[in-house]
Length: 372
Image (cartoon, rainbow, N blue to C red; front, side, top):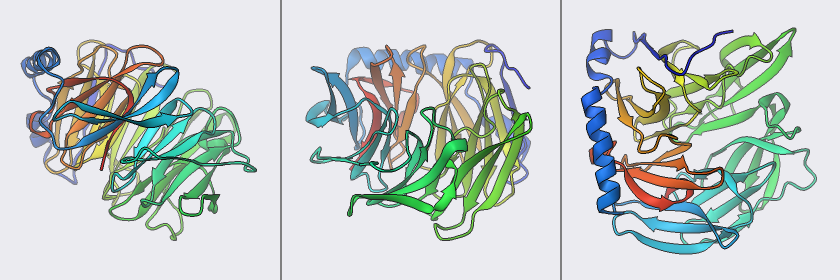
């Protein structure tokens, strides 16, 4: 079992597929001066204005009058529109490929889809199905999504099967009788990844399985085993929208997380590994991935952005010490994140593609996503 301390950080690059090592090191992390300037800029932005020069629109959830209100935000003007409300507190939100709908996942087995323009809520019934919790979800089109439905209250791919929900019929059915969970679909390529987990002696064997299309046979992409109670080898891996890249967090019994980055054209060999103390939070978009990680010299949290187009890795200061619990990218490359104020209250920060790391406080909210 490997243990990592919050104040220790390792960044190892093995990039035979992309570009020379020297290029990554020279263009990778921003300097301390840059990070401090970014933090100062974020604070100035919060004090000066609650608007941001971006073209996108956000949907956030706010606790209002005892309900979980759906609020549509326009960062460029600061305008807000209350669309409706959810019947549960959402833990996760996923915008559909076009941004026309948002899937919300709550505790246990609560699912709902919201129209991003009208606020109409479509509840997803799981009545009669052996599902007690949801371990992950992914859209495959604007009308269908897959999710991992677990037989246990504590969600885990060990006890999960894949299910498909069709919004046009309202039906939820087993997806090809595949066991496992935590699915992630590449809408640009049509490939799917998911995780299986089973006990082998004193170890837990976890495997990332990949389908080149929804009708293809699952193939093993990567597999690892660790002591049963030592954490997760592949904790909710994420496929890039074009299916060419994959990131998988490894978690342990402490707050450390190891992100492994893969080129899906090569079997199970990461080209970049990042290790540090932080919760798991990551999102793909616009050819980049944002993920939460600790600073190299202390326990402060930062946002790291890896750009697949040039192999650069850049770090930006978080506007709050609590870091971010969720990220989402707009099609234009703008980034939004949610920090935690309390267990049920969050704060929404956004950063324009033209000045990533210059955070603007857009007010309270949970699970922000960019919508149509």
